[in-house]
Image (tube, rainbow, N blue to C red):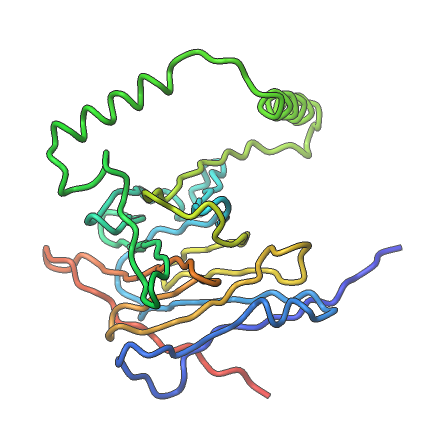
Length: 281
């Protein structure tokens, strides 16, 4: 017998008339709706006018835990029908900003990430780690990174939790190779957005993201156990070409500024935002 559960779907839409006064144009409080008996999938999308270049696609998971935002990309087997082979990087833009960028030769999407805490009633951006901070002299950054690499390579005993994780991975790997036609080789790559002096407790969130040629979509399921996905999503349009999302709860938030551009006549040109259609009904 097949049992079906009802899943609600909501989207974070732009209003019909767009202004750029840096005031919120959309807001969803997942904490409020988490009390609903019906699990609900909330979607926040930032779309761009389609350009004339082949843009890379990407998808994966987002996790906020222990005060850190982490992205896990899903690495599928190569498929010539899919445009999933964009080059992806994370690197600091300035002392307060980490940037995730996925790009093909003629198209790129950039997501500038900041982590902020509220102090004395105002939001303050945390600094990227000193070993990555552009204002720190290059020689000092190189020495910090060298020491970090040395410590990382030092042999140490695994904790009980690490041993259990390794055993589970080994069992899963063995099971995959005995699953016959059901198995598929899927890899993952986790990349964090580190900042110094991060709060030990921010909020807990787990969701998915998908980048395709005309925008990016974030989705989060509510009604999960505990405090998972009980946070506020807020959107602000900075200008005609950039939109910003905030994921926040209490005195902690993550700021994501999204833009997309294409290479045209040897110069990178920003694509304009496109308003999402209002829901029918």
